[in-house]
Amino acid sequence: MTLILGIESSCDETAAAVVENGRHVVSNVVASQTELHKRYGGVFPEMASRAHIRAITPVVREAMTQARADWEDIDAIAAVYGPGLAGSLLVGLNAAKAIAYARDIPLVGINHLEAHIYANWLVPPGETEVSWPPPPFPLLCLVVSGGHTDLVLVEEHHQYRRLGSTIDDAAGEAFDKIARLLGLGYPGGPAIQRVAEQGDPEAFAFPRALQVGPYDFSFSGLKTAVLRKVQALRRQAGEDVGRRGVKLAEAGVDAESDLPIADLAASFQAAVVDALVSKTVAAVEDHDAVQLLVAGGVAANTRLRSELQHQVTVPVRFPPIRYCTDNAAMVAAAGHFRYLDGRRDHAHLDADPSLHLDHV
Ligand code: KG4
Ligand code: ZN
Image (cartoon, rainbow, N blue to C red):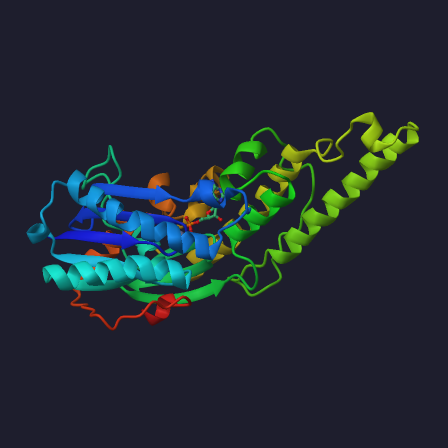
């Protein structure tokens, strides 16, 4: 039996969690900075780092208290050291180093993307060890977050082969940018999903960018297509009002609110999901994967979940939403398997903002 304390601070969530045997969440504490970054429409790195410094000690203490764990019970401290924002990563990593040193507990450095993948090992509330068995290998994992969009073949624990990636924006980044364009706020993914429920996914035929490599993605053309459509619709709205002989402002008409936001959001979301699903289906079939895991913040998307479930021929697993977006339970789960594998880190482990999955 292992009890691992996980620590995560790579972006805008300060998180700590205690996990038993890499599978059972004993405590899971996340301090989100969403409110702080909302007014900037994205993460403001210096503010993120300062907020992590304020939150890290209370968050770790709370995770230990909720777990009713003593330091002697903890077998290892698993901390994310990359990829992510340098100033953010350093806070969690340094806290982990300090505790590990002071309490003489082994330190295990974890790749944030690996942690997202291992969220799929965590037994969700209401499931059991039997109903939610450990995923079988070889498996394919679609990692879709704010910073990454990768198709990864996992042949065994810690054996990764990246089959493809985005050549420009990450899927989550595209959601965030289009949400900003449509005035829907931050974070964009959940906002677009909510608004898209009222819209027609076929209202606008946005490009799917399928002509890049067989397992690669591209979202910049889609982003431009949505921008052009919004500009054209705005012009049209302005002209319509102009034709009635009234200036926009005088008429009290906000061209923006005249936009078919729900249809735009639904059509954009459908285009992203189609691109993700078609490449994933091909990768699963070409590599004889026995299961598909979906990981990262965009794995929370309901349309992506249902389309993958319908179109992929092997069983598909998604973590519960709370383990899809950044959290430390997934870090502790990954930490369990790395710890068993013998990985140990020391004070010289440095934050690596551009750490790759195949270089862990
Ligand atoms: O994995 P994550 O929490 O942080 C990173 O490691 O980047 O992912 C955050 C991303 C954001 O871009 C957010 O807009 C997106 O995940 N996201 C979603 C949804 N929930 C979060 N995208 C689409 N649909 C959602 N329901
Ligand atoms: Zn993440």
